[in-house]
Image 1 (tube, helix red, strand yellow):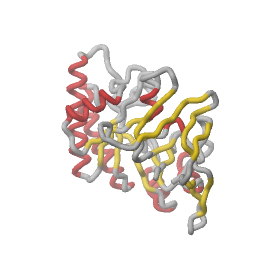
Image 2: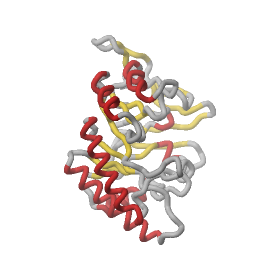
Image 3: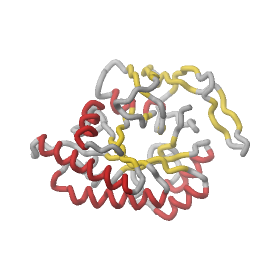
Image 4: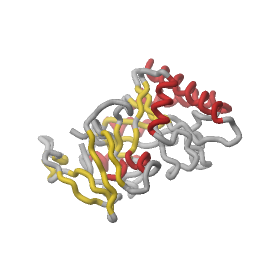
Length: 267
């Protein structure tokens, strides 16, 4: 059964961030994620998670100065200590929120640093982060992103992500991928075939993501881009839980074309 978490960075933007937890719960979600909590009211986040009985599924390690163009710092040898301090900051917050997974955006390549030096740095940093998170009972996820969405992103393919996991030799580090992020970098046809033993998050139907190991065997599903959106398996109806909340019923789901801004998805 697919499991979804609402990405509060990208969904429910009509209300301020603290109110999106309630909006997600009212929409039927039982889990949430967002990009970064570090500039938010931490006490208020923890309170909202408890009040609305939400699971904190994931958030990112500190990724540098996002407004200035940073998309992660694990690849930068000059920022090794900053990265490691950020790992500890993320672990502390994950413990506070009861979050069992943290994601690492490795950052963009630098033309001023030899590629092999950047590769050695990111492997070392991922190994460090995986060990630190493992001690706290948290899994580290590493995300490849295509260079269409983030020009110059260092880890731009699933194959490269597998190489990174193998190089870090971290048994508690996992790879995950977004069908949107990896598809844009691999084909211009708009067709995508992906593995989805556990669909984890929704920012739009085109961005349903999987937390499976990149090299593991699993059942296969597919999504095909259409003019008006994406063709993807959707439930036929919503059912009422015993507590009165509503959820999607995925039994007998059919393929429908939906726009990329739809957001009525739930556990």
